[in-house]
Amino acid sequence: MAENMCGTSVACGASVACGANVACGECHRKRTPRSEAELRQLKNRLNRMIGQMNGIGKMLDENRYCGDILIQIAAIEKALQAFGYIVLKDHMETCVVEEIQSGNTAIVDEALELVKKLK
Image (cartoon, rainbow, N blue to C red; front, side, top):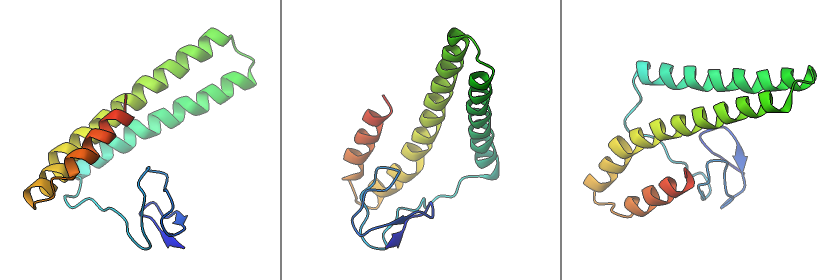
């Protein structure tokens, strides 16, 4: 078993949670580290979404009106989409640019596939 950067053990060549197909011991790492401010902003957004998800759980326990729950689901979906676009923007501005500068133009195809997945 290999371990991906998220700490999840994966079998050789297994597809990991991020959707990447990794070989034994391989794992993508971001070359340009996120700033403390960027990391804090992303984690804050993520924690808000987790709070909203927990709120839906409470709404279910309280047998709340379906429409209210659906509104919360829509809010989480929009927040997650915005979160994804922030990460994609960072990816394009750092990882993709660095890979192209180092001669790896195949990164463009990967970036296009990632954009498709965010639709």
